[in-house]
Amino acid sequence: MLKKVLLYLLFISVLSACNHTENTNLSPLQKLEEGNKRFVSGKPMHPDETLERLRELKAGQHPFAVVVSCSDSRVPAELVFDQGLGDIFSIRTAGNVIGDYELGSIEYAVEHLDCKLIVVMGHKGCGAIKAFIDSKGNYNHEDHIKKIVEYIESEKEENELVKEDKLSIDNAVNANVQHGVEFLKKAEPILKESYHQKKITIIGAVYDIENGKVTFDSEIKK
Image (cartoon, rainbow, N blue to C red):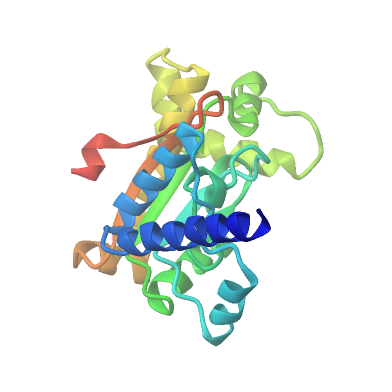
């Protein structure tokens, strides 16, 4: 009986490895899309999560994508996209805001790790976005959260929503993602040049914390 169980576990392990190997033929975006489909279906493969994989990475990392997402504990990129150690260069800040430190990290991933895909991923029900909407331009608490709210308030895309009286949590989340994408496309000196030379792709995405699905920006994705 024990022998049968061990053989079965070995078969499952080999099958999972084969499936993951096949995925290496996919583009970086397709890898994220397929991984999210597995996550949403409740059938994740949990690739690259072994000590053996960790030892392999000792020689160096080669992530296939950069994901800029919110620090929210419900939005872990590796789980959402069913990836593992060394697969995603993950940058997380509340409201997925991007300052100098985050930008420098992204530049490092592009320039030194050869990442070809950058995803700016917001999520539904984002607390930072809610704080921006609730404050109505008057966040009075003397804390560092204020800096995050002020950053979101300064985004051109958010101000356009206010002027057009279209400010809602979903619209504000989308506008925040759009801002991040446009900001990175124009970020000098590394990203702007790489983007215009079509060496990298920069796209937006929104994660639904109710069903786990990630929707990529269809216009940018084309």
